[in-house]
Length: 246
Image (cartoon, rainbow, N blue to C red; front, side, top):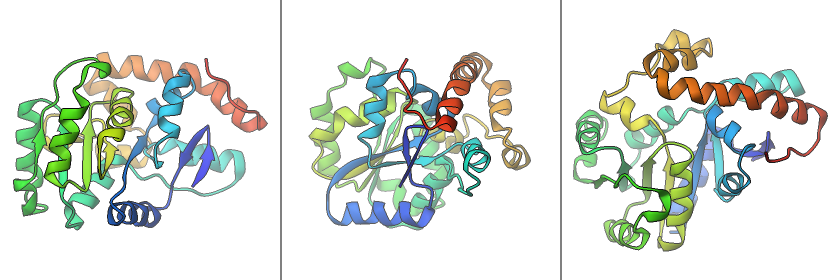
């Protein structure tokens, strides 16, 4: 792992999967954050949320801009590993028992339909709709009991940041095993409810523009907050100073 911008990133895909596999084999619970630009900004605006991200096993780099920043600042080459790709890699290429938490009932039904062709065993795995409520009000004991009984090795959580990371942190003490991974909009992508940006836009680091166009109310505020916070984050990283929480 390497720490940049106050996030403990694991950039190497093989290492990500090896650590995931080892934790599952050892039957230890844990959680992984999928750190996009929104999380990058949030950890510098909220001290409690930063601690939540710090307590994860590690974060994968979901932002294609972070490697560009690192190349500019340090002359080093790192790659990003987006949550949507990690989700497909794990679901399609593994024999793990999984559970899928979050989203609405229709999203979960369409997600099951959409990803079962990748891995037919998914059809018999739990897809659990979570109630719409503040993070403090979930019945974590009941949720964990169901997950523990299911034998899930990997628990995909799609509640959006910062809620999904806070959810995973609170659920962790109740789990006997299983690695949670917060995947944001991935359920919407693979259920067909939200389209991803075309590959050419992603290759040019312009996916955020597509998201703004398709979800303006949600994404404009998010991008505004990122842009407001980014200059300070970048300057502090460049000057080698410890970043403050605002």
